[in-house]
Image (tube, rainbow, N blue to C red; front, side, top):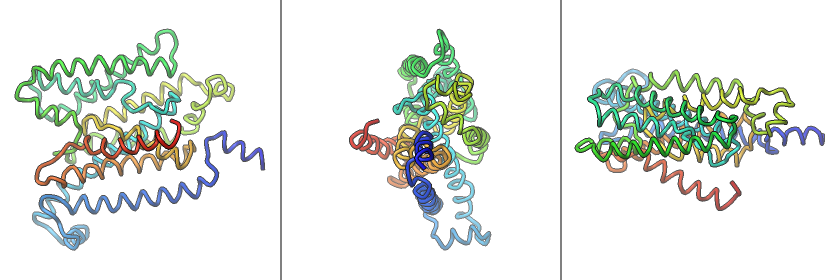
Length: 341
């Protein structure tokens, strides 16, 4: 019995976490269902719940059908995928680097994607349909540069963090320099840099869907190796893990998830930082329960923030990133005050 208890603790499990985890998953699913209902019904032109029910049954058409199927549903699904991807990317980065302050943007992917979009908009004439792809390309390029710098002299979590900070600072400085010459485009670019889902449709869902599903599947499928990376490198190697291979692999998946979210929603802060902390506080580091929970919590934070962003001052719209910061900032402060990070 004692050996079983010690083994469970070594895997990062909190006693009673199985029941607590199932309860948390059910609660998050219900909260997402309520948020989805409100997201489809609320807006500058509200859709009554009775009409929404008829739409789901296929017996309603006209303006409500356009609002729900063409505008609000794809936007909600895009937010759900963005939040789930950011939550898991944050969990992966914090686990791989063994740094509770690590975020999905640690590798410079967020700053690189933002810089690419700003440079393309200011320096060239680029159609809006190409911006998500440019953002993904910029994020991948910044992450690749971080990998190269971190690999000089031996790849380690500390070198990865330091290289990521350097690349982030460089990309942010370049983006700021181009913003100074953006002229009439400044307002649009600043709004994009605050993060948001305004105008997102089915094409954006199709863009992020394969990246999100592929990345989430890989992390879930190889989660036992993610658990091993929490240990000291020598201990992990003694247990048969190829530490460098799995660390690079998981970081690459986190980069892909983050680049896809920035390409669709812009830089959305705090979700990938706060969601893993809240889940770890409740469930420990047991990947089997924590990964689904962090997906759902990240999705809930983004979709709920987006709902508030587009309804609080309707018909005007506020930046999504402002509300994720307003939700995530106080939660992070509470975590700092109540436990050691």
